Length: 499
Ligand code: NAD
Image (cartoon, rainbow, N blue to C red; front, top):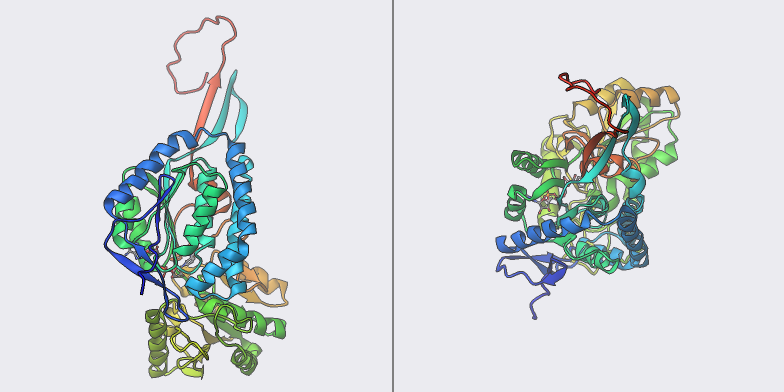
């Protein structure tokens, strides 16, 4: 068999073959077919990428803001033209259904549209006459070379959360995508060059922990954005800040939906099934936990029945609700967690451990799985399972549900289903979670807001996209100015006051 095509690195505007002898295969999770291999870039390659980004910064930061915005408009246009093609690449390397993969691309395109509005976003502030004849204004200037480290589960959307806005702000960018699905970000970068990005403005390098550590220690990298698991996010935040980088780390989750008895029953069941099992539960905003309050507990048979009607399948199967898990290791981990939950005494209402998809015996399949009667300390409930699973929890009151959610150390997303404005008001005020849906199951904000995970789901001060990302990727400069008219005699000012 011919050796698979090696994923190239993008360094200084050229696609180059890495000289590394260490590679990991990129595998179709439905068939185990090796699609390509991804290299672990050498230190020399990483150093060249950063040096090229640093050199490109000197000219890119001087490019007028409207011209940078036009690059984003061109890019948005190309991404839309190649929407289906990008979705198919995602589906092949990650196994997402075609519709879900299209959504992954679309939510990234929305951020590029936001970046095209960079002139408005970069506006500073001015005050005339802060002292007699003295004015003050503030500007937002780019930082330099920024770094992005992205996870496997949104190979289009999450790189697009980062590099378009950073680059629109006048920075240059080094992207280190997930080693599990590098073909999508490679295509994103090709299209960015086709849109007119100058050489060196975007670099794409590959690898794992060693490559990330090297980049976080590099003195020329000013800021780092990370999206991934809790454990890795903590390490990256510590390492980056230790090396004096500005960091934003979006990490893992364990989200809950609360259902009040007055909620619309049909809507609850449909939205719950979609948000628990969509993308095989491999979303940071998935809902693996539902808390049924009071009489809503009578809806359990309906939830189980609706879940029985969905099934996994290959990306091109329009009837499939979701695809395979990312790797056999991920699938086996969830299977073990299911076995452990049974051993711990939880009640299994639906068991997807043994799941086959006809014609695809080697896929990393798992059927939808539902447990109830869980204790808070059981791993199946308190860890991020990241599979097609649902924990059904029960509460007597909204207060009890809020307490349960606020006890979790993570706070990425949550939602409440109710017909009561008072209940909604109480929930959205008291819940210690950064993204709240009211009768909306997966409240991922559009890019003119920011992605605002809280507590253990985020480390840093400024969040991804929206106005906050523009602050993250820029430095504020304040200019205080006075212009003398004629020769006005004055003595030295010995105080700190503006005069
Ligand atoms: P991961 O943490 O394993 O990997 C993320 C990135 O970090 C990858 O690029 C990987 O190569 C790199 N990496 C892995 N180990 C490293 C190490 N020891 N040192 C330095 N870099 C390392 O995450 P994943 O499995 O790819 O993605 C799934 C996780 O991401 C889930 O926990 C999910 O909740 C989370 N996620 C969070 C958000 C969010 O916005 N909060 C969004 C999507 C995914």
